[in-house]
Image (tube, rainbow, N blue to C red):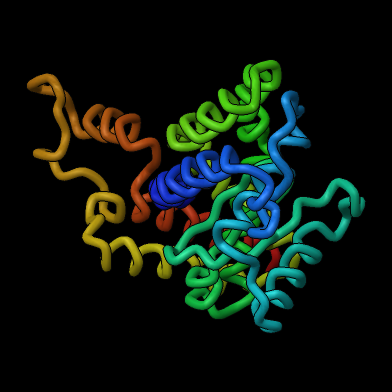
Length: 268
Ligand SMILES: [Zn+2]
């Protein structure tokens, strides 16, 4: 979910990191700006997660409003009720200006505008559960294997490498749909109102339409897609999804509505 939005944040982060990296050559004064400690020469996945977290917090500042922190904490705890404390993912609210959510390392990051707009715990829970699903289904593990490649290079190379990879970081359309399904089932098991959960998609849709991203919402028009003459609708859609990296929001919402009906039926 939100992969396109993540790219926007990653670009902003890239700019910040380039500036931070340049600043780090200037000497000991940098300490006073509260920068995280300089990147060590060697980092494992946990080290990188902690380093990236510090960079994100430095760039975007942590949320401080009680209602937002409480909502994040409630959702984090309720979705991971049976999970040992040390194995839990941590939900963090950042002052990123866009409607956005993504996961990196052991954290799920929500932007403040997203949390404001979803309005209920249920919808926030669906967004968080979707990011948790990428962990549970092994999507993140697969994506984070590249960290190993950078573990052995000097710090400067790691900075550039991390950001380049983050910008290109996309899940496949199948992974997105699987994460949606896992998320809705997780929300159902945690006792959330599924209809309220799905309002999260309306928030996303409104944001995408505000920004003119019509095909992200409705999927491809025939002229949006290059395909061999005679290729059918399903082929065009398949090509489009691979180009874009995710299914249309409309398709995701339809599937989730069907699943919600099924889950509610099972509960009745
Ligand atoms: Zn996703």
